[in-house]
Image 1 (cartoon, helix red, strand yellow):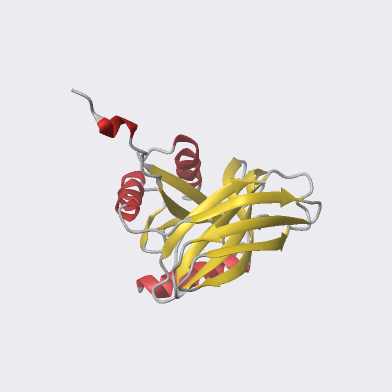
Image 2 (image 1 turned 120 degrees about the vertical axis):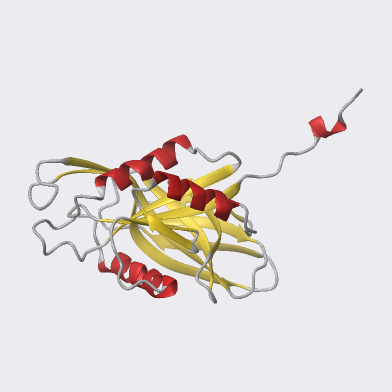
Amino acid sequence: MLHAASNSPQPAPSAVLVELFTSEGCSSCPPADRLLADLDRKQPVSGTTIVVLSEHVDYWNQLGWRDPFSSHQWSERQDEYGRQFGLDSVYTPQIVVDGSLQVNGSDSRAVLTAIERSARQPHIDIAIPSLNRTGTSVNLQFTASAAKGTTIYAVIADDADRSSVARGENAGRNLDHVAVARTLARLADLQSTALDKTTSIALPPDAANRQLRIILFARDNKNGHIVGVVAREL
């Protein structure tokens, strides 16, 4: 008996965005940093592409160690999630999955459950057909399926970083990070028809000798959920 289904095209993997809010000044954050790296390297959820992003907040900086990768823009982004989820306060390490589920960033079981749950939700298609990195910018063509009320954002991230922490709660430790967010840019608002656009994004000033990633994600403007994501190496 022949099985025609064996020649049928396989469905494209779902892509899920996993954001970690972290700080080198936080002693409970290194296990979450390692978990994020494992998700990135091992891709443990079958049929799902996990796109990771490490966002270093700055509110730990006055407690003995200034995180060199921290920025107030990531603290503000976390504050937005705090309001969205109705939290009394934000915290580190916090993982947000597709902008719709938040868990303690060190709880691997809860993180995997959230990823599996989010992967079952509908997502729009985003792709980067062409990409060209110059000295100070990246030129890219990107496409997205129709999704009115949705905005496309781009993050430039360091592929990996390492610090030797001299002070604070992690004094004396060497800390490794993956997909460290550097810049955030709003690219386009989606409408009722598919989008095909070419644009240019400035690179961070110190990016010349760094291995980088670009991450594009689509955010529903009503509820803050991430409804599509794609990542490419630069």
